[in-house]
Image (tube, rainbow, N blue to C red):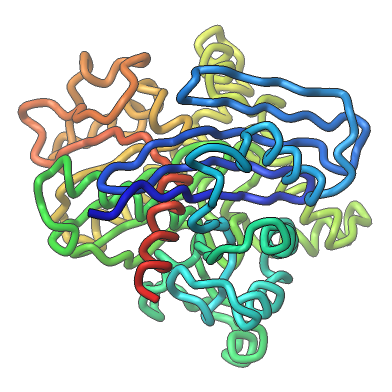
Length: 402
């Protein structure tokens, strides 16, 4: 029997490091988790939670000069040099974009790092920090390191789903196509859905809703992803907290000619100043729902646009599956917590075999559960996602396969 092996999971951003340590064996247990934020500023902070000791540590208003200093502070806070977790078995890194070169979790080599760098133009906010995190972790931890890519789950998309109707040379020369994201979450959710439905993954037809600040949907047919809402970047698809989702590309030209905006300005607006925030000045779904119920027209509009876009894709995915659907699966912050949003998404779909049990669907009932009515032909599941655990498990699989 293989003993418990400590796997450190790192999600490196431009000024942050999210981290978690899992002991992986026949079961998996999270030892600690946290975030180093504000790296490179005078307002750095660290929130560290020891789950075994049920103890939280909060450090703030000091300077973490760079990612190496941040990771060293994590080592210090977590006592990684002591006790059973002294030797890290492996490090798993969350990487966003692997393009077409990397379609599975990969042991980090120079070739893998080169691929991450190559696709940085398609994920400029994510891939460069990931590469920096890998470099720092390789200096600090002398153990196998694995890159787990958000795009990997969607590598099974057929060309009809991933190609844009642009000149073919744009795809050949620049790799511009739809890639999809949140793949680490979807992989985890597919596994949990298989357990809950007591059906092999390879036989499942599921429509997933990953609804959080970043939001997307994906459709799986016989265990294989055949379509998803995000595109060459995470901007396409659903309305999100600050991202606009689907929009006519001619808007860029209009804003340039009428407002004198540069492409970079438009990109910033679409990614950071649009979505729910752009429509109503708020990006917290709880407060948006509250304001909408209190009569705010802008908040009601934001809510309606958000739900309309989801239902539009839901209809398309029901068609792609020919109505043969095992389950709808809701996850992420909004999908897991908001029964109100789930009800709006599923409202009036009785004829499609989708009907909720109002009592089971209520807000506040946290955890994996079924929320469909007895009359519903299609099951409706709520499953809390755990991307960090998924990364840890995939890291072990890669290392053990070597």
